[in-house]
Image (cartoon, rainbow, N blue to C red):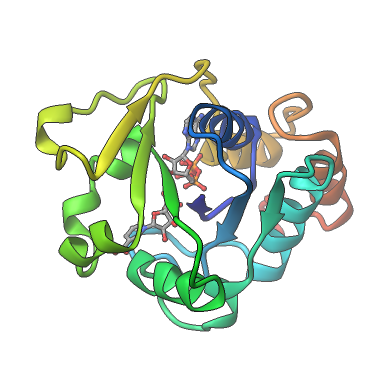
Length: 187
Ligand SMILES: Nc1ncnc2c1ncn2[C@@H]1O[C@H](COP(=O)(O)OP(=O)(O)OP(=O)(O)O)[C@@H](O)[C@H]1O
Ligand SMILES: O=C(O)c1ccc[n+]([C@@H]2O[C@H](COP(=O)([O-])O)[C@@H](O)[C@H]2O)c1
Protein backbone atom coordinates (compact mmCIF):
# COMPACT_ATOMS: atom_id res chain seq x y z
CA UNK A 1 0.00 0.00 0.00
CA UNK A 2 1.56 3.26 -1.10
CA UNK A 3 0.79 6.55 0.57
CA UNK A 4 2.17 9.81 1.79
CA UNK A 5 1.13 8.79 5.32
CA UNK A 6 1.41 12.36 6.63
CA UNK A 7 0.37 11.05 9.14
CA UNK A 8 -0.74 7.43 8.82
CA UNK A 9 -4.27 7.00 10.29
CA UNK A 10 -6.81 4.29 11.03
CA UNK A 11 -8.41 4.64 7.58
CA UNK A 12 -5.15 3.35 6.06
CA UNK A 13 -4.84 0.52 8.58
CA UNK A 14 -8.42 -0.70 8.20
CA UNK A 15 -8.13 -0.61 4.40
CA UNK A 16 -4.91 -2.66 4.52
CA UNK A 17 -6.32 -5.17 6.99
CA UNK A 18 -9.52 -5.67 4.96
CA UNK A 19 -7.64 -6.20 1.69
CA UNK A 20 -5.22 -8.62 3.39
CA UNK A 21 -8.18 -10.66 4.64
CA UNK A 22 -10.23 -10.58 1.43
CA UNK A 23 -7.31 -11.31 -0.92
CA UNK A 24 -5.55 -13.74 1.45
CA UNK A 25 -2.30 -11.75 1.37
CA UNK A 26 0.78 -13.03 3.22
CA UNK A 27 2.01 -9.53 3.90
CA UNK A 28 1.02 -5.90 3.46
CA UNK A 29 3.99 -3.66 2.68
CA UNK A 30 3.35 -0.02 3.52
CA UNK A 31 5.44 2.17 1.23
CA UNK A 32 5.68 5.81 2.34
CA UNK A 33 6.27 8.04 -0.68
CA UNK A 34 9.41 10.06 -1.21
CA UNK A 35 8.36 13.22 -3.03
CA UNK A 36 4.79 12.66 -4.24
CA UNK A 37 4.07 14.09 -7.72
CA UNK A 38 0.64 15.63 -7.10
CA UNK A 39 0.98 16.89 -3.53
CA UNK A 40 1.86 19.95 -1.48
CA UNK A 41 5.16 20.02 0.38
CA UNK A 42 5.07 17.09 2.76
CA UNK A 43 6.60 16.33 6.14
CA UNK A 44 10.17 15.02 6.18
CA UNK A 45 10.25 11.43 4.93
CA UNK A 46 11.93 10.02 8.06
CA UNK A 47 9.08 11.28 10.27
CA UNK A 48 6.46 9.75 7.93
CA UNK A 49 8.44 6.52 7.75
CA UNK A 50 8.80 6.24 11.54
CA UNK A 51 5.12 6.99 12.16
CA UNK A 52 4.29 4.22 9.67
CA UNK A 53 6.61 1.79 11.49
CA UNK A 54 5.01 2.67 14.84
CA UNK A 55 1.47 2.30 13.47
CA UNK A 56 2.10 -1.10 11.90
CA UNK A 57 4.43 -2.63 14.51
CA UNK A 58 1.80 -4.71 16.30
CA UNK A 59 0.54 -6.52 13.20
CA UNK A 60 2.77 -9.46 12.14
CA UNK A 61 1.50 -9.23 8.55
CA UNK A 62 2.35 -5.52 8.20
CA UNK A 63 5.81 -4.31 7.15
CA UNK A 64 7.19 -0.98 5.92
CA UNK A 65 9.46 -0.43 2.92
CA UNK A 66 11.93 2.41 2.37
CA UNK A 67 12.15 1.92 -1.42
CA UNK A 68 10.40 5.18 -2.25
CA UNK A 69 12.00 7.37 0.38
CA UNK A 70 15.50 6.05 -0.39
CA UNK A 71 15.15 6.81 -4.13
CA UNK A 72 15.35 10.55 -3.29
CA UNK A 73 13.32 11.61 -6.31
CA UNK A 74 9.69 12.11 -7.25
CA UNK A 75 7.80 8.93 -6.38
CA UNK A 76 6.03 7.12 -9.19
CA UNK A 77 4.28 3.81 -8.57
CA UNK A 78 5.93 2.31 -11.65
CA UNK A 79 9.32 2.70 -9.87
CA UNK A 80 7.91 1.44 -6.56
CA UNK A 81 6.65 -1.74 -8.19
CA UNK A 82 9.83 -2.28 -10.22
CA UNK A 83 11.96 -1.97 -7.07
CA UNK A 84 9.72 -4.28 -5.05
CA UNK A 85 9.67 -6.81 -7.87
CA UNK A 86 13.49 -6.72 -8.04
CA UNK A 87 13.69 -7.46 -4.32
CA UNK A 88 11.00 -10.17 -4.46
CA UNK A 89 11.00 -11.63 -7.99
CA UNK A 90 8.67 -14.51 -7.07
CA UNK A 91 6.00 -12.45 -5.32
CA UNK A 92 2.62 -11.57 -6.82
CA UNK A 93 1.86 -7.97 -5.96
CA UNK A 94 -1.44 -6.33 -5.13
CA UNK A 95 -1.34 -2.53 -4.94
CA UNK A 96 -3.89 -1.06 -2.52
CA UNK A 97 -5.37 2.36 -3.25
CA UNK A 98 -8.33 4.34 -1.98
CA UNK A 99 -11.23 5.44 -4.17
CA UNK A 100 -9.80 8.97 -4.50
CA UNK A 101 -6.37 7.76 -5.61
CA UNK A 102 -7.64 5.20 -8.11
CA UNK A 103 -9.87 7.81 -9.73
CA UNK A 104 -6.65 9.59 -10.79
CA UNK A 105 -4.81 6.49 -11.95
CA UNK A 106 -4.90 7.36 -15.66
CA UNK A 107 -2.75 10.41 -14.84
CA UNK A 108 -0.06 8.18 -13.29
CA UNK A 109 3.29 7.64 -15.02
CA UNK A 110 3.41 4.68 -17.45
CA UNK A 111 -0.06 3.60 -16.39
CA UNK A 112 -0.36 0.87 -19.03
CA UNK A 113 2.75 -0.86 -17.65
CA UNK A 114 1.39 -0.84 -14.10
CA UNK A 115 -1.15 -3.57 -14.85
CA UNK A 116 1.69 -6.02 -15.67
CA UNK A 117 3.42 -5.43 -12.35
CA UNK A 118 0.53 -5.69 -9.89
CA UNK A 119 -3.16 -6.28 -9.48
CA UNK A 120 -4.79 -3.11 -8.13
CA UNK A 121 -7.38 -3.12 -5.36
CA UNK A 122 -9.38 0.05 -4.89
CA UNK A 123 -11.10 0.42 -1.52
CA UNK A 124 -14.14 2.51 -0.74
CA UNK A 125 -13.60 5.82 1.01
CA UNK A 126 -16.28 8.14 2.44
CA UNK A 127 -16.91 11.12 0.17
CA UNK A 128 -15.41 9.53 -2.94
CA UNK A 129 -17.32 7.83 -5.72
CA UNK A 130 -15.58 5.94 -8.50
CA UNK A 131 -17.11 4.75 -11.72
CA UNK A 132 -15.96 1.13 -11.94
CA UNK A 133 -16.61 1.06 -15.68
CA UNK A 134 -13.72 3.53 -16.12
CA UNK A 135 -11.26 1.04 -14.63
CA UNK A 136 -9.73 -1.83 -16.61
CA UNK A 137 -11.65 -5.00 -15.85
CA UNK A 138 -9.42 -7.79 -14.53
CA UNK A 139 -6.64 -5.37 -13.53
CA UNK A 140 -8.51 -3.50 -10.79
CA UNK A 141 -10.77 -4.98 -8.12
CA UNK A 142 -13.14 -3.06 -5.90
CA UNK A 143 -13.53 -3.69 -2.16
CA UNK A 144 -16.02 -2.10 0.24
CA UNK A 145 -14.30 -1.51 3.59
CA UNK A 146 -15.73 -0.15 6.87
CA UNK A 147 -16.19 3.57 6.29
CA UNK A 148 -13.78 5.73 8.25
CA UNK A 149 -14.08 9.40 7.34
CA UNK A 150 -10.49 10.16 8.34
CA UNK A 151 -7.91 11.95 6.22
CA UNK A 152 -4.33 12.97 6.90
CA UNK A 153 -5.30 16.52 5.90
CA UNK A 154 -7.91 16.63 8.65
CA UNK A 155 -5.48 15.12 11.19
CA UNK A 156 -2.87 17.78 10.37
CA UNK A 157 -5.45 20.53 10.59
CA UNK A 158 -6.73 19.25 13.94
CA UNK A 159 -3.22 19.22 15.43
CA UNK A 160 -2.55 22.70 14.09
CA UNK A 161 -5.78 23.97 15.69
CA UNK A 162 -5.07 22.21 19.00
CA UNK A 163 -7.76 19.53 18.56
CA UNK A 164 -7.05 15.92 19.57
CA UNK A 165 -6.21 13.18 17.07
CA UNK A 166 -6.58 10.41 19.64
CA UNK A 167 -8.47 7.45 18.09
CA UNK A 168 -8.04 8.84 14.56
CA UNK A 169 -4.41 7.72 14.47
CA UNK A 170 -2.74 4.99 16.58
CA UNK A 171 -1.72 6.05 20.11
CA UNK A 172 2.00 5.82 19.32
CA UNK A 173 1.50 8.17 16.37
CA UNK A 174 -0.30 10.72 18.60
CA UNK A 175 2.70 10.60 20.92
CA UNK A 176 5.21 10.81 18.04
CA UNK A 177 3.43 13.89 16.62
CA UNK A 178 3.49 15.55 20.02
CA UNK A 179 7.11 14.65 20.79
CA UNK A 180 8.37 16.02 17.45
CA UNK A 181 5.99 19.01 17.38
CA UNK A 182 4.68 18.01 13.96
CA UNK A 183 1.88 19.92 12.25
CA UNK A 184 2.09 22.90 14.61
CA UNK A 185 2.15 26.12 12.60
CA UNK A 186 5.66 26.82 13.95
CA UNK A 187 7.07 23.34 13.03
N1 LIG B 1 -10.13 6.85 5.26
C1 LIG B 1 -9.70 6.14 4.20
N2 LIG B 1 -10.39 5.08 3.72
C2 LIG B 1 -9.94 4.38 2.65
N3 LIG B 1 -8.78 4.64 1.97
C3 LIG B 1 -8.04 5.67 2.40
C4 LIG B 1 -8.45 6.46 3.53
N4 LIG B 1 -7.51 7.42 3.74
C5 LIG B 1 -6.58 7.25 2.78
N5 LIG B 1 -6.87 6.20 1.99
C6 LIG B 1 -6.07 5.71 0.85
O1 LIG B 1 -4.77 5.42 1.32
C7 LIG B 1 -3.77 5.76 0.36
C8 LIG B 1 -2.74 6.68 0.95
O2 LIG B 1 -3.43 7.86 1.35
P1 LIG B 1 -2.71 9.18 1.84
O3 LIG B 1 -1.46 8.84 2.58
O4 LIG B 1 -2.61 10.16 0.74
O5 LIG B 1 -3.78 9.67 2.95
P2 LIG B 1 -4.87 10.81 2.84
O6 LIG B 1 -5.68 10.73 4.09
O7 LIG B 1 -5.60 10.73 1.53
O8 LIG B 1 -3.92 12.10 2.85
P3 LIG B 1 -4.21 13.64 2.52
O9 LIG B 1 -5.42 14.06 3.28
O10 LIG B 1 -2.94 14.31 2.98
O11 LIG B 1 -4.39 13.72 1.02
C9 LIG B 1 -4.52 6.39 -0.82
O12 LIG B 1 -4.71 5.38 -1.80
C10 LIG B 1 -5.85 6.80 -0.20
O13 LIG B 1 -6.88 6.80 -1.15
O1 LIG C 1 2.83 6.93 -10.31
C1 LIG C 1 2.25 8.02 -10.31
O2 LIG C 1 2.28 8.81 -11.25
C2 LIG C 1 1.46 8.39 -9.05
C3 LIG C 1 0.78 9.60 -8.96
C4 LIG C 1 0.09 9.89 -7.77
C5 LIG C 1 0.06 8.97 -6.73
N1 LIG C 1 0.73 7.80 -6.87
C6 LIG C 1 0.78 6.82 -5.76
O3 LIG C 1 -0.49 6.65 -5.16
C7 LIG C 1 -0.32 6.36 -3.78
C8 LIG C 1 -1.20 7.28 -2.96
O4 LIG C 1 -0.74 8.59 -3.19
P1 LIG C 1 -1.20 9.82 -2.29
O5 LIG C 1 -0.59 11.02 -2.99
O6 LIG C 1 -2.70 9.81 -2.31
O7 LIG C 1 -0.63 9.60 -0.93
C9 LIG C 1 1.18 6.53 -3.48
O8 LIG C 1 1.79 5.26 -3.45
C10 LIG C 1 1.65 7.34 -4.64
O9 LIG C 1 3.02 7.09 -4.97
C11 LIG C 1 1.41 7.49 -7.99
